[in-house]
Length: 387
Image (cartoon, rainbow, N blue to C red; front, side, top):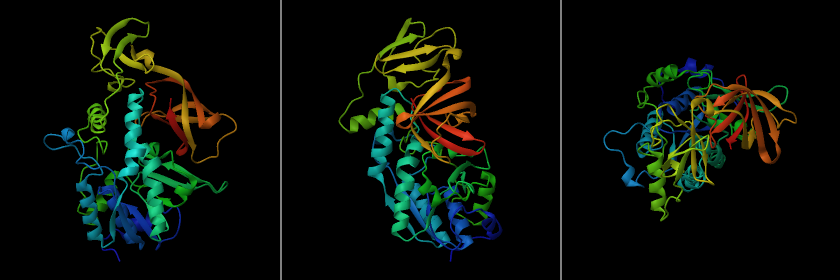
């Protein structure tokens, strides 16, 4: 039996989307306060909890990128794995570290680098969720006889009583909602996954961690991409390529206004992203932004704020999460980046797993490589990658 503080009342009130209490549950323990609190809550419910920590990236690689002084908190470090073990020992549950480094590099790091080199701005957290976390962890859960997987994500899962489909929903705490990064979940994955924090706010989670006397109760949230240790993606890309005996492609070229005027030169497309204003390398006398990147011509297109807006965008690799692929266009509120206010739009399913989003009003800085996620109220209808 897990040894935790007096949080039974809250534990009993946390909804469990599938299965019954008392089952074997694998908890993905990152070493942070959220997943640690999940483990404590499920222990208090009476589940047989097993903690699994993913080893995703060897922090000793690319030593030239290690920050000087105290780095900002980031997930998936060696210290995080040790913190997860401390929490497991405190709760009295088994804990194992599973090595997914090879898969993580193939499915997240390499696509991250390739996307930037192609003039895109990727979402590594979505790549990780889609291709690394859920499938391998659910496979491992089956191998040890666990019925389900629990994570510290702020989102919710429910079953549609009419269709029988599993639905992905926003978290009750909109300020912590992570459903944007989970659009790749499948019906099978959601049927065996629970998000115990979906109905809770961050402040309450901290309080529960303190009540359970978790050793990470005061640990700050992670703020960095886990494998970009110094927080500088350009240096990471160039160092990663150098480690592999490669060099960044010669994609230096012209900086051009939307009217075609050449106003400067740049040192590589991967140094820019749509919507960027600072560090453009020229003075225009008025605010100018990156409007588009053209890999074929190696040009960075710049313009004024109004020129950043797009009325439509196409999306690839669409996953319809809570509904079957619609035969007709559907109305949705579409989010084109994590902090974007969802905008009313019509979404039309296209051939080959694509979709076209037509916004009611043009949206600012719709960026290739970012995710477009379609919502109906709190329900995530689907999502994919902007092209």
